[in-house]
Image (cartoon, rainbow, N blue to C red; front, side, top):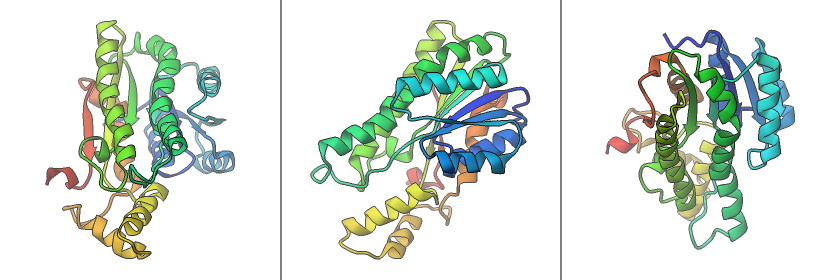
Length: 264
């Protein structure tokens, strides 16, 4: 189940956190993996630790040339591309009144423009491999529960992730209409214990006029009925599933992995 034997994946923002864990699980499942990030030292260290048939490439997801080069390097090294994971993302943690226009542009550049460019520039390689695959190629976009329900902490982040949610559905429909064998799905994490998760605790504390990050973490924990916060493996397993042929009848769907947060 969830095997990726013979598949080639490119994961953005994969120097650490969910992206790095996804790379690890994909390699275990038989894939060859390229990871891209702007954190070059972390990225190279991650690749060394992963072993297997892996590649690191510098990738600023807001730059077309970086995407072209990352896709080309992946295809040259591994012979093609079957899976794109648009994982790179930012959390701002500011309200509408506090956020500056420059901060919005930076947030939207990574969370929205990065997903658009990754999808557009990986499309030819994905389409080529998908044409000869039983269930086609796969794109998995990292959205968020903040792309399904409102966010008190960061409405601008919610705005970008809502965009990713509907872009996923629209891209899936466009590719189906054109006869491209490319499935496009999104995954929606709850609060995950990563660097970004830590930023949400700090933002929650700041919004409450406090520096008590531990209390903010406990408050976040109480919103997850399952009784714990998520860890990167929880999300990585969902990504591997959506990328695998086990999800061959899924496109335009959103997989919610949130410990019950949005069930309330």
